Image 1 (tube, rainbow, N blue to C red):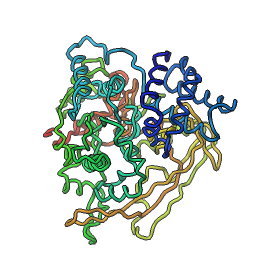
Image 2: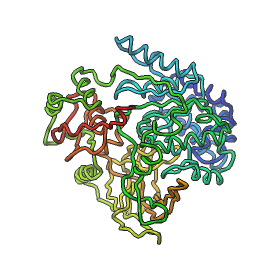
Image 3: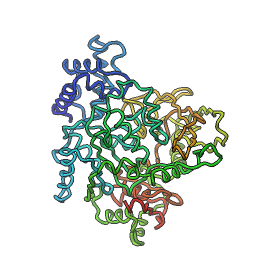
Image 4: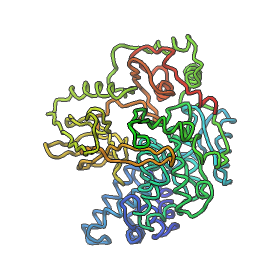
Length: 548
């Protein structure tokens, strides 16, 4: 039950920040000034709208109760001007999304007092110093719990970010690109692109960069070097402080032995207007010496304090934990592989999440599952536009959305874009209604009419002397932003925990940390099923990570 303590904290949070500050703080959710809505929100609290949440069972239920109450107020002619309920809903949901009531005073309950002390001392360091910190640890050592506990107890103004939508959802934050939009480009990041984007942004929108003291980035292993340098430059630029990260305390959380940043290895960047092309990987290697956040020029300037969490809380079986440890650092022996292969099973249990190494395998599993639904199938074809500059094959273009999307009512789907206040990339939903021209999906307890989104493919030219990249649009795709989700990639599972997992690595793994992430999502060895036996070659660790 959400009690009066929650209601009191929420009311205090809004009132302490004030209508103006709170309005600016969440302006990113709807793209305009929220100050007037902030005042209306405080009025709503004063007339008792907040009491609706006290009997709610969880945060999502509380948000639904609040929305119902606001609609009732509008219908009775109180409080809300025409069209204003959506702004207030966004404001309230933003508050709910950024605060959760702690279940216990402590972060974990465990007999290992050394582990608990380490976590609590880490939180104290985060709170009582201005040090930049890199917090690491094996999968399941409490990194996500640590972040949430720090956010609940801190007196600092904290923003929490992550590189992917699912990771952002897990840490109750925003994605890096949505927070730094429109300054931070989706493609390779340079100062020139940031400055170009800055010219088109109203000064009010930059106020959020002075509204926090500490920036927490979860799943830091997946952040590229150029992205981190872009964050550093934006914070210096908008806070008008020529200090590392604009003087903001940076807290990085993640495990470098898990998945690395996604980097395109196809030769798509034209060099010096010639016929020669290089890949993103080559570009990052030549300009940064590597792809990881620690290769960024800004990282050593930040003088980061290193803290490693040691105790694994996710798994209780010491045998499974010891196997995961040697998989993580690449020292697995034959007996470790043999122990895991006892979980091999040719038939697939029903109702279990399937984690796959490749998108092709995800597609196959999802097609098998949708075929089991008896509802009529609708197929939605994407609209593809090729620009004159592009001379390649259509099949060479990579898109997040399916060019032919087949759905049935009842299908499990994943959202593949962000809609402020509604969902983030990676949220799981269910198809409720379909017609030839419309789609309704239930996400986070609410039914949404889904509109088509567009994605643009770009090509780059690179001048080696000036070290400048220029982007050129080559194609655009319009499609509904959903994909089937009975199965999804290991990449999208990072940060999640499941009781029962089917791991399908198909022929071989191709990324460092991939096997470790897939196996460590499961709470127990008994809950794990392998679609094929593991090989020692499936265990890959990047030598640069070991060296770091």
